[in-house]
Amino acid sequence: MTDSRLIQHLAAQNKNYSDSYSSKGIPGQAGKGLLLLTCMDSRIVPHEIFGLEIGDMKVIRNAGGQLNPEVEKDIVLASHILNCHTIVILPHTKCAMASMALEDIQRKLTDLSNLDFSNFNPRMIHDAETKLESDVLSLQNNPMLKEGVQVFGAVYDVDTGEVNWIE
Image (cartoon, rainbow, N blue to C red; front, top):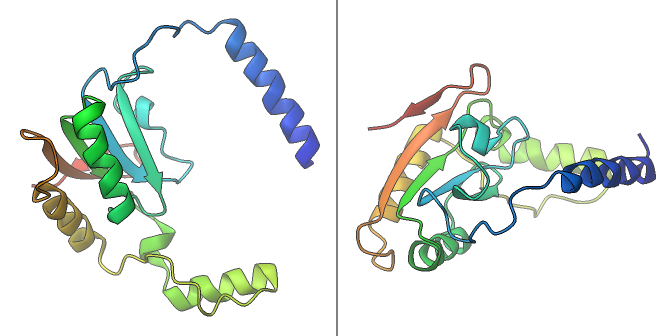
């Protein structure tokens, strides 16, 4: 599908969606008090995973579902302003950020684009379990989070749809 045909398709689908839109008036705060930090992987459909509706939670996505200083600022804001008192960090199985070496990513990008990616350094995940535990602990110990906020970690299995919670 060409770019222009894709945009036409998206516009038509949005028209269908907006014609039956019934979520007017939903507040901007998280209705269930939940904020989910997850990966940008298209196999993850956050609201469906947990059986939630529009307006129930806030979702932050990035490569690998990783905590970083900018995301942490967003989460602090959400804890105070957007009713987010439960935070879930949810990376997933078979994530490229955790399964490929930096050099492989750089080489692949260079091959695909004919640009020099030798100095491109995305946040790779060297040990997924340790990274998740570290992210959860770091956020739990952030003194700027609203008092009483709870932080949990889990891994989404892209093959089964199951969420496996860490202790």
